[in-house]
Each structure stands twice: as C-alpha cells, then as structure tokens.
Image (cartoon, rainbow, N blue to C red; front, side, top):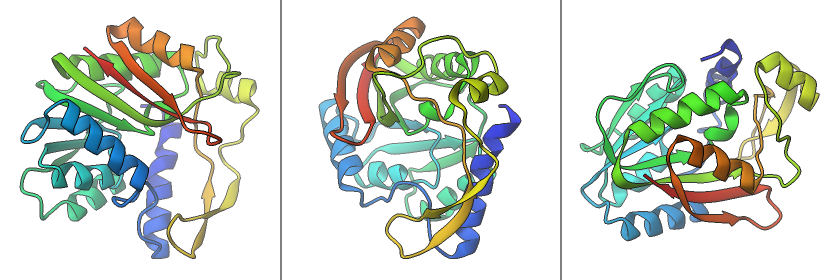
Length: 234
C-alpha cells in the first residue's frame, strides 16, 4: 500500500498516547450494531466465518463476536492490529492479523465480509480495484459483503485517479497539516494530520462493485451525514 496510508497508523498511535481510548467506531455505536445485527440474522452468520477488512481497533469485531460469529479481522496498521488483538482477547473465536489487502490476497473464503469506513480511504482507481478484487476472492459463492458508512456524494469526482498526487490536485486536499480533532465519546481532542479519503456517488460505488463481480442488493443513505451503507452479494 502507498506510503501515505501510513497516516492511519500515526493517527491510531496518537489517539492511544493521548489516553483518549479508541479513535474509530465504538462497539456500542447504535447504527453499526443494528446494521450488523440485521445483516448477521438475514445471512444466518451465527457460528459462521466473517472477515472484516480494515478492521481498525476491532469494535465491529466485538459486535460480531457478541453475535456469535467466528471473526477474522485484518488491517494495514500495526498499531490498530495490536489494539484490536488486546480488545478481542476474551473472544476465543476472534483472530486479528496484519495485512495489506491492496497488495495481498486473503487465503481461504468466508461466509461474510465486512468493511466499515475502509473503502473510502483508498483514493486511486488501481488501489480500490485491487482491494475489491481481494474482497471478492475471499467471499464464498452466494455470500454477502456489507460496506458500512462509506463517504457518499452525488457530486463526487467521477473521473480516473492514477496517483495520490493526482488526487491531491483534483481534491485540493492537504494531508500533512495537523488539525485539532475531537475524539468521539470523550472530552479529549488531539492534533492529527488529515488522511486520504475519496467519496463516490451511489452510481460510482455500484459500478466499481459490479466491475469485480458483486451484485449490489441494497444501498441506503444516512440523512444529512454524507455516508452510505450498502450490501453486495457474490
């Protein structure tokens, strides 16, 4: 994975060092919890294998483990992987491992795949395609993949992006200047550099999922948040 994605590892480190707890989604987040409860029930995933790509600090892993899934989580951030392993120690069916899913394919196939705010962190067309191809290859025939809270904008850039530098030029974004960020669920703030993210329109997401073989079954926008959750099937 490109060097600039390592900004995520620095973010996890700084939040941990600040004593603010975790940076990502809480295991008590009502939207994520209800979304996963519904998905697990509809796909009969209790006691089945579920892989989360870009697992972060493991909150979704805690939710899925509570729901009785055999959880596997992978992330490109060593710091996040270590935090997730510690948080999921009490769940014997949970496994966390470091992996770059842009460069490497997952061994084996899973009964379900979860991505929570992971896909939108990839900004080049090639990285996104490889990531989705690896997710598709890790999904059993007929199995479901859920993408939770991805950045969604009807006016999102729809052209090609060949490099991070090209995306910087298109978006006008600066991913180096630190800014004060509030840590959800706490009274703490930390200074963090911005990180790469690329929104897509509804049509843009459906197009890139279908290009690797998925069939999108549902697509729901959250009102006034600029986020979308969608389900696809192999």
